[in-house]
Image 1 (spheres, rainbow, N blue to C red):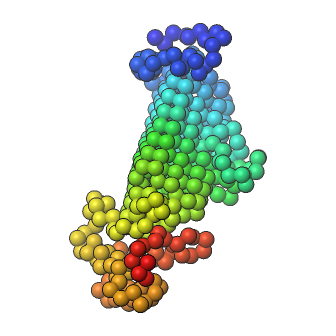
Image 2 (spheres, rainbow, N blue to C red):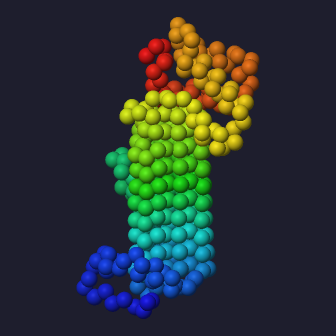
Length: 325
């Protein structure tokens, strides 16, 4: 099955499309570790680690470094100044890197799904041709099919993906985003430029997040484009706070006492018995309450809310009980 395939005048895409998935699996199953299929194009200056398997019709550029034990499935490509860590897998049609100044860096044990595009030029019109741009991806990320992750828009910034994230099919992570660890992005989650997502956040499908927004740790988004404080759950076509992300907090080991304290604080801030006090006053009162002021998760939540109004941040989601609105 691994005999040289004569392409002739056919285009590469037509050859690949004529091979069904079973044929591709059979092609790959015959590749021993450390083998390069004869139809693959690997530049002689590329650096390949031990046990790297490269399947049919793959491309590996001149300044590419591929770590030990990596697997490139048929029709996958690595371009530009790109470094791929050990034991990464590029599924059929995946593209890593671009022939641009700068660098794409992948850690170890990452899976790049079918036809995903990772580390290419951003879509920011302010990007100037010839500027360096960067992407850094950590370890143990599952980046599924048709996802796109872009490099930074300027040399002074970097698009960053942390560790242990699940990025489901058809997601988009734009330039200069900062993505933490152990995050789940459901299908078709779209992040505009400069978005920050903290650890253990979770989005539902088809969520859109506006540029420069900040999503706090342990939060859940059912739909929205504004800042989301830590531990909270939002939903709606124009996102509104819908309470604490209780299920997510329990799953991640928050104690019953911590959750009770968070619920009390949430009610005092967002569902006050008296609506005469302004929002800032309610936050200040929360920080003065002895029974809550020294609870670390409450302090973290309050600080997350305050941070949402700093600098160029966009504030947080609406809540129907704020000042009776």
